[in-house]
Length: 378
Image (cartoon, rainbow, N blue to C red; front, side, top):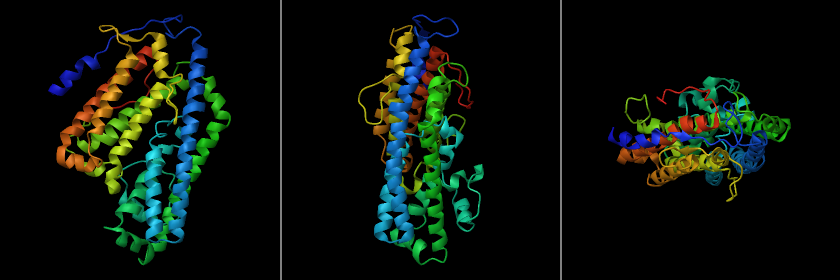
């Protein structure tokens, strides 16, 4: 309780908005449609599409190594597939926040990264090659978490894991299921990238308003939702038991990459860094910030009325605070919860402070309406 009291000043920012032109209904900089159009174009051409292309390259390696394993399962192909899966899972964290437009249309996140994996469902699907994987009940039976189980958790060591794909009576069925879910991921990813590179690119950039359904509004909602629900709660709050509305009981078995536990912190760090980079307009391989949420807030003159500090600076400082908190955690968040869960709770509290600023202060400054609901008390 005392920790949250210390954070109260951060939670209660009061902003002074200096609008260079614009009006009460649209507190935007002068020539605001052009400014937002530039930001939208930068998001698509310099951040999202390059990030998807980078992810596709890494994913294609995973898909290739997966095909090699299912064609000839042995120790070498298992290790190669596992390494490629780790690299692809880390790269996925750089694009998961773009769950709008084509990714929302195909519900990419639901088919790529709903965890913990449904082991009973995976087993049932292995035994039924005709099962429908398009339905909501199948989300946790596929994607990266399912592959995690099938590569790392189906046996106690590599010898028993290989036996599940070579000498076990259901070996052929398991190999077929691995091929099916990796192939399905490839198809969905291709669809999303193709649509972003097609007509949807211009459609997205043309919707320059701030109303519900505008590209700015949709993207900011997706950005805040992702940080709140899938980084703060999913990666940290639920496993540690710190999430608002929880019983306070930790659930370490709900960490991301449960069967390859030593990458769970790296996954969280990659996701956090991707959110910070998007806020600042940084591309996948760029160190130079472009048009962004930050630059838009600065053009509005959004500040803390008490200190005169720019809102964007406050947000970036909180991003940095969270980075420091994450850096102090063990590589395995499962082990961190077991040995020192308070560090996880502290990380969650820092993330909650950021969520409050993003969800309330940032969106209010920009005049974007939050259209999703969450039981977090904000």
